[in-house]
Image (cartoon, rainbow, N blue to C red; front, side, top):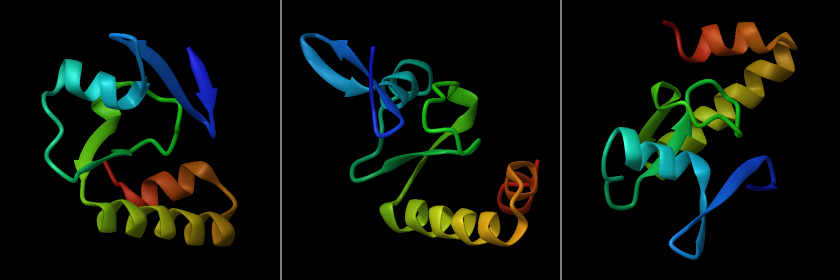
Length: 87
């Protein structure tokens, strides 16, 4: 496994792929065209399929911006997760 920028990569059929995308495809199904995989847990290295969601690029960026803004204001990951993705 190779980790760059916090995202683990693994070899699949002689090609390096992002591990969270491979996990999504293996456990959930095909990734819709033009979709990105969002980490609901905010952990870039997470490959738990229950923590992954296919979203549009704009939604992924919106969520990332909301997390950054909330993180700056609250300085607490637990608060950020609860504020952005309530369970």
